[in-house]
Image (cartoon, rainbow, N blue to C red):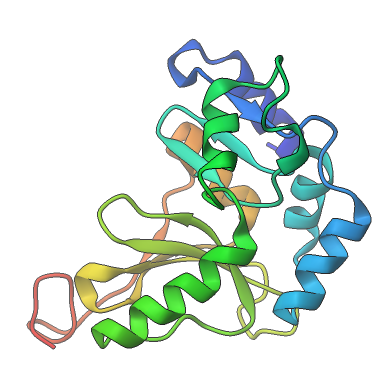
Length: 189
């Protein structure tokens, strides 16, 4: 499935309501500003998502991107989306990276990689990170877990695979393997 098919799937799934994405997506200028600010070149599928959807929010899930803050108080704006935007930068990928770098430093965790963006914070602690162009892992989405001090727990081969997993449960991520008792989810550091 491509991104448009996946977004149509979530829009039509009554169990995932309420669904909201930015009307019309982000502008090329806004996308360029994210790349310039973070010194990255975004993957093609994430750029497509940003330019067509901006951000996505549905029951229990958020894909960060570029929210339309000027529209947060519009009468027809989804209340959940408007509240999230007004609360500060819950949906804004630009803010998360700096916030998580500070958290990692303060707690002795692995630092957030430089060449990428945070797509989503994981409910139990950690984050999903998209590696950008120029990285040896370009295009991959990685789950860095707080349970293992900010180390990689699993990954998907593309942003599109990551969205598909959130919506359908497939494809399964590739899990990291850890030697028994060393740096694993249940081992000691």
